[in-house]
Length: 394
Ligand SMILES: NC(=O)c1ccc[n+]([C@@H]2O[C@H](COP(=O)([O-])OP(=O)(O)OC[C@H]3O[C@@H](n4cnc5c(N)ncnc54)[C@H](OP(=O)(O)O)[C@@H]3O)[C@@H](O)[C@H]2O)c1
Image (spheres, rainbow, N blue to C red):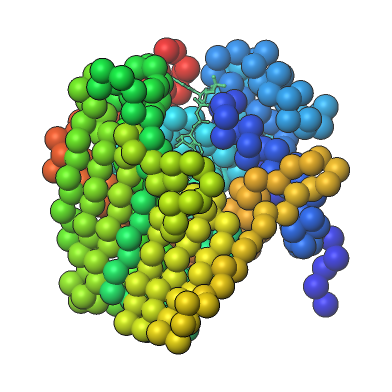
């Protein structure tokens, strides 16, 4: 008989920015509100590289328990014996050094997307997790949505026949007068010192849908790394990629993925969905359209030859914890991480290490073709515990 006591996983939060707050609030929701009863999450510590006060403010802000520890450095967090797993929520420039810091300290890691700046960094992190027998996962939350699971099931059950093409777009229109983009030049979206640019921040979600539909859903022994052709426009002010279009060719399967991202145009200009599906998964007998933003989809339509104009929108809502009045959808990936830690699994089957590597290789290659480069301090694959990315020196 299954134990009725849920397994508790104890989280440490590394960084106190926007996504750290969103994720931590999800951790603090009651799992029963999403019908999860086998695990629970505890937020035991939060660390800020700026100041301890910032960690204190964060804890108060998200209404974490008063026992939650507040640290003024990442070093203290990774040394905390009460922490089972660390959530890395710094800009992607910092992921490699910060995740290495945690792994080297013997901690399991859930690391925000994009996983790293280069594929070599991803490979190094995975080697380290493997050598130290630790759990490590890229936090692509969208993959754990019930909607994504359903779409993958539709594909593998043959609902649209052979999938030959996926077109996926995640673009946010931030065009501004005089050739500018509407972010301060120092903002992590456009600042190459923080690995800014459309591809690593947004394009990863377009690639997520290409990979879910054309790669992940293939039998294990048939998976193939794609050929990559990319076109990139760079932002004249900072050199970050502002519009990136990638064609991925999977030769054995005769399929193409088209991953699009831009800071100039929008995949949803009125933010009402009027522009239609930004994700179209096309097979020999029909297509699946995924509605809503690529990162937080809200519904899908299955259109087949027999649909006769009557394909219905199947909507998915994200459950809210009524007591906290909160629910963003990041808890499903947290549940996956918790179950993996509980079960001694080192990687998630929904986003295995090998797939994270291939995706990073695609982004590497696209950036190479587009001539985008990042500073050495953020692109090196040599771990340095004293790196300014770990000390918080700005
Ligand atoms: N899954 C999603 O839906 C989603 C959404 C948005 C972002 N993200 C990812 O999450 C990561 C963080 O994004 P965010 O929007 O939360 O960024 P943010 O609001 O700017 O927060 C980043 C945090 O990182 C820490 N940090 C350390 N060194 C820094 C530096 N030199 N400059 C800026 N921050 C520094 C800061 O916390 P301390 O000062 O406390 O150390 C800061 O608050 C990115 O990799 C992004 O791609 C994911």
